[in-house]
Amino acid sequence: MATEGEDRQSFAAASPNASTRTFNVGTRRSLLARAQATEVVKALRAAWPEHNFEIHAMSTTGDINQKTALHKFNEKALWTQELEVLLEEKKLDLIVHSLKDMPTQLPVDLILGAVTEREDARDAFVLKSSYVGTYKSLEDLPEGAVIGTSSLRRSAQLRRAYPQLKFADVRGNIGTRLSKLDDPNSEYTAIVIAVAGLQRLGLTNRITSYLSKENGKMLHAVGQGALGIESRNGDQAVAELLSRIGCDRTTRAVLAERQLMRTLEGGCSVPIGVETRWTSKSAYSNTQAGVGSKPADVYDQLTGAAKSESSSDSDLSDELILNAIVVSLDGQDAVEIETRRVVTTHEQANDLGFEAAKLLVNKGADKILEKVQLNRGIIQEQGNA
Ligand SMILES: NCc1[nH]cc(CCC(=O)O)c1CC(=O)O
Image 1 (cartoon, rainbow, N blue to C red):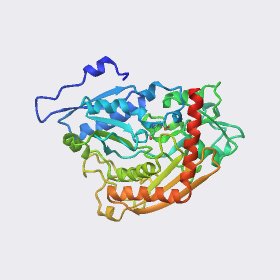
Image 2 (spheres, rainbow, N blue to C red; image 1 turned 180 degrees about the vertical axis):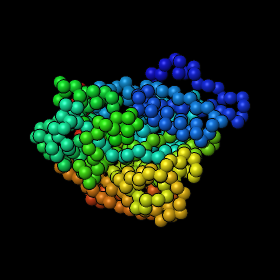
Image 3 (spheres, rainbow, N blue to C red; image 1 turned 135 degrees about the horizontal axis):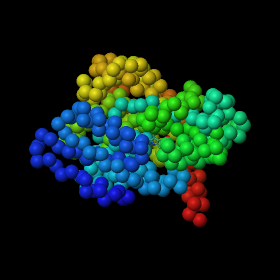
């Protein structure tokens, strides 16, 4: 663990006053990770003014090993494992993750304790600064223009929709990727990057266009735009804390997405894209009504992330629509499905995800994914040689 000594020493001991406790919140060290943890701690402080919350930001293997392309790692766990050990050792009480970086299988003693309200789940098309104004969208790009992305999901979908484009790896945190993009000597014309990350860093001014199934044939990653909070199974105090900051609708939507992923056994960077949306605009409720409420705002049809909070009964007829795509790495083959059902419980959310996986497999998704695994094996062999 590449944590610094001062981090370890600053873990506060439990307060002698039973009504006031200090909770230790773990996160990765990147600017985005810390912004995310700060966002969650702000909500926790508002909901629980009597408690103290301390953020512990740590480097993980995934952060340190930036040279190796993401898909060469078999395990998604490289972003999460070291923090999880500290959670198990009770040095941390909860961990804030980008949900999309959280494996669908967690260690047995740990759980996805809560999911907060989702930001925009879409990917963004971001042009090199010097090209802003020259091109407006992916369609406008000249033959052979190079798109920077290290995500197989992104490159596969883009290859399919825009066969005239070329793709190159770009690694690093969001700031690094943007500076590599803007470097006049870099090969990139544009990069594709999550809207939510840009939003949380106050960088939405960099977005040239928003990509979706409708616009650009780009479905986002499972869990994209949402924050997942990992905690110990059976930790009642933390469960109670989290009950005030979780978002029901986001939770149900991402559970469906994660069940789809789990069923297809997709790992870190497999080309599975999803989009979820609710048929009704109302009933976007926090786990506990009245806490963490936000001013009413427009319903975001695409992400299913209504920006208002209410505890309406229309939840009971709430239907969730799930779109999903599995694409071959070269973009040549793809299977796509849409399925929907009333989802008012976590079980129904899992059922929807499972149903979606079944529909995809019936259409041949398993064969596409098998080939992806095979390719990955070959890439790894070459990497080892
Ligand atoms: N793969 C890295 C990663 N993990 C989480 C985000 C931010 C978006 C999110 O929270 O879903 C990003 C950046 C990106 O994919 O462009």
